[in-house]
Length: 223
Image 1 (spheres, rainbow, N blue to C red):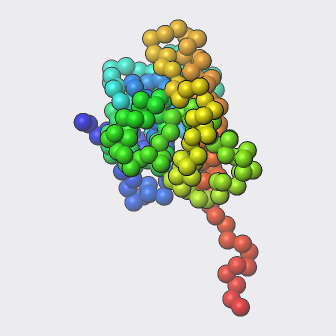
Image 2 (cartoon, helix red, strand yellow):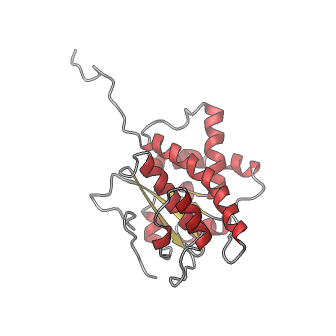
Image 3 (cartoon, one colour):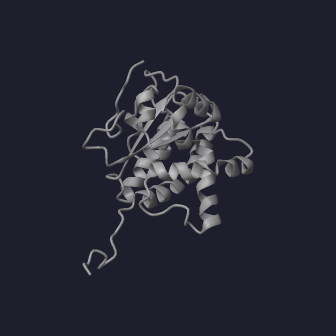
């Protein structure tokens, strides 16, 4: 299988990129759900000044590299200031991309299962889009946000969240975000409107997880 690299998301972090956390989105064709998630989250991270802390990428389990992002999603993105969708090209999922990610977010439970069949060690850092979008606010509400310690890192955040994933699964009617490809424009827009709040939740959580830890004034003072 080809091991493609997309700018800003290394298959395996280099020494210069090792300080950046990596988030990977996965769907089937890498032109609708995961592509919109990648560029939508990247847009939010840039707006929050977090692009130097977090790399975002996406892959497809069965991409057709002759296809591009459907126009309803491109238009929806541009209306919100999201760039890159018009130039996005699908790339295949491979094990190196999975191993290089601190957080893996799939469109469906089937995609999640495929990731875990190939890389079982990714269990505690892999969620579906609807699952993570439900779980993070739930944990914040239950703990007043204390479950996510500022600066704990994205990998640690994922591991803690994974311990409570059953709560989100019990609250959801299903784990899958439907694929709009080839359907009506309204189906694309419904997918985007469902995914956008998830991206907002992720932006906040990633900010907190990667926030530089500050040393209290005077803590290094010798006694």
